[in-house]
Image 1: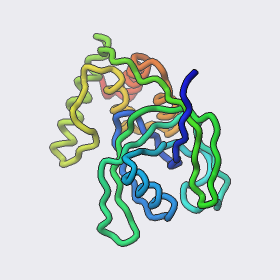
Image 2: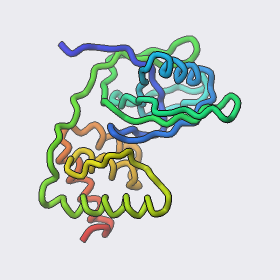
Image 3: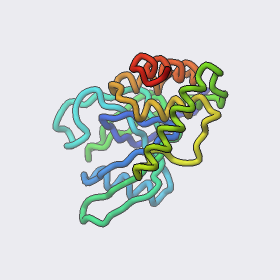
Image 4: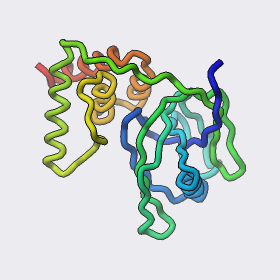
Length: 203
């Protein structure tokens, strides 16, 4: 039987991929307390994509979110502005929500089971142009002073390459969610490759 764990949730209008970076501006008391608890206990929280409602306000709107999300580990916190935390996180393990509930302070918590990590598999030979294009894109972004990805880079891993493309491509959030959920990293990369070719970004 798969072990179930209780995880605090941060519903967002965004999708976090394993290995991805996420920046958060935290000011609501429930989330400030959550980040403080994560730092104190060296634990993380779960990021889930909202499909209805808002993450702001305790019970302002009816909230619903996806059943599969990604654990987030806190990398660093900047509290230079009073009452506001700038938090940088990294995605780790995907999880599936078995049940969820909202606490009196508005924080959502869930009983979750982990989703198996993508096995590390090399990109298929036909995907190598997509791999090279990602390396070129990263070099261009770095030259512009941007660093959207956490090093080290794993161009030999189909799942890693697919996830990084999914983060920067102008895809609808619902499409990103479906791609994140896919259990086959090779298929995920193939879908990314097809999108790039459909937009004329690969020859």
